[in-house]
Image (cartoon, rainbow, N blue to C red):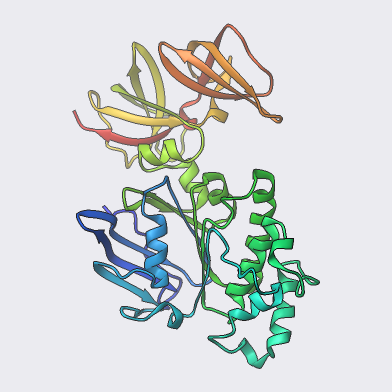
Length: 372
């Protein structure tokens, strides 16, 4: 399972900054991480996202050296780190609870990271502390006590401490999970800015899909101890490769039905075809590319994002009844009842009663085909 979604190909001939090759971690009979193979490119912001218990934090701990794999190999820049303790792996780690020392000042907390390694480029400790506090927008906080800081400020101090020795790799384990939504949005921008300025390879763990999509170069969507899909945020959102990814990452409408016919799509220059799919007696038309082996009688699963469902529009239309509506500011999230199935629609204004809703074939994404 772990090898299927792997993306090979760090740029050029240089080895990846981090590589997991067939890595498994078992606790008794339970595989917390199951045959995972993935690569993180140098300078990349790579995010592990998934529900609780999917193995994302254990994967991070295997990279950090806090856990040793039951099987497989972890490599940094092509070299195995088997048996190398965490303090010798040249990684900085920011934990979920920040773990700041309450008896130390902010400056002393940042300096703690320099107890095990000298500052980079021959800098003095004082200069390095000042540089990092400036980087995390806390230039005047060196003499303050951690308890006097807000949660967001403590998170930034923890990040400065992790960066103090100039590590090759930064690991962040759900560092914003305890913060309110508005603060998380502000801080994720800061985290991404800091990572980009330093060009440091970063592996980030979160359960928040929106956060993962917003800050990452690539995302690994984890399930049952292994990546279900590894891709750019845009590909994970628009082109999910499994039903789990389609339903986990953002709102989605997932359909499954029997193919009743295949026809050429005259308006498509790339040779796409149209599959007519029967769902509960309704025929919906879905674009399928040449690589999709769908024939009449097959069971086809596809998805349509709520923003692509249009009221009184689209080629494939069904009648549904408004079940509920949530006003979200810019849009209204509407749940429709279509013959006992829920359909999610994003609309500008609230709706009520019975509506006609539809989508165009190109707005559907095929997830998979089960042969008849």
